[in-house]
Length: 363
Ligand SMILES: Cc1cc2nc3c(=O)[nH]c(=O)nc-3n(C[C@H](O)[C@H](O)[C@H](O)COP(=O)(O)O)c2cc1C
Picture (cartoon, rainbow, N blue to C red):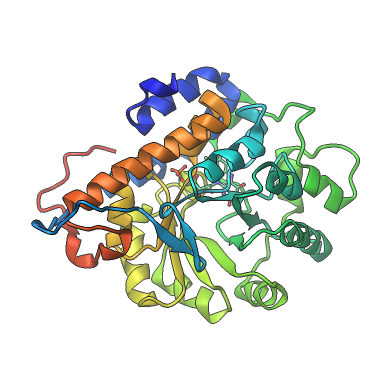
């Protein structure tokens, strides 16, 4: 029960218990040996905070700005495909939960709900769109236009897929989408008559994407374009050179390249290279408010959470999503106070250092 949750792990247990093995493994799993999946979580714990004391912390707020507009906290909901597998409320439940928590939700290209429906379900909410470019540029354009017309605020172009990673749990389970579950925007954009399978969908995507495509998308798009799914300083610099408004340091939650650098380890080099240019986001393994605080000390403007929000959705629909986000917000608020900060903006690189002893975490 939501009222019993004291941390995100409680939502995880309850959400996972509600799912059958196929969807559960699809959501929880990663690529290959799942080393990156585990290390994403563990790597936040390889940093130690350097709290400052005796600052008046009676008034502490997690409020921040996202794309120039206020948000209750620097935590957004990451794009996650096929949310109807988790709960009948699907993406509308996720959007309502995010809106209730005062933050933005990023809708996947592989959404089981159309952007306009998501926006209508959470009219006070803020919505971003994750874009997989397709070989047919007309399909890509139609998807983008649909999100822009629905009032979405930003486009996140995913750069670390296709091809899809080696998800061995799904292969072992012979996981396939239920026949009735579709991606209506994609079906409309491709002019198809039936829902596409995961394999068919990935086959239609553009596997030949280059930085020039980022330039083209950014120059043709009326809202900011971010590159999602890079972990190096070199690629972050290229993203900005090619017109991106910012980057999302991400390895797709460990679902693509196993043994990819954990995002907590990648973030410092990206922050150093960007030197405050563009918006810097990070996702992967964020499970605690203290992880959010660590990401901010390492230079992120905000973080995204994928599976935590999904567990909330699976466990209790929109209320579960809002509850998970609320737990992260409360933990962040306490962490700020204990670091001697009254707002996320007060956290700096001086508040963190690498753990002084070899980590006790095993991954
Ligand atoms: C089940 C699942 C589906 C996902 N689907 C997408 C997607 O459609 N597009 C995308 O860019 N990222 C997708 N991601 C990656 C997330 O956007 C995000 O990078 C990742 O979940 C962050 O790690 P976390 O789950 O540890 O928070 C997906 C992740 C999961 C777990």
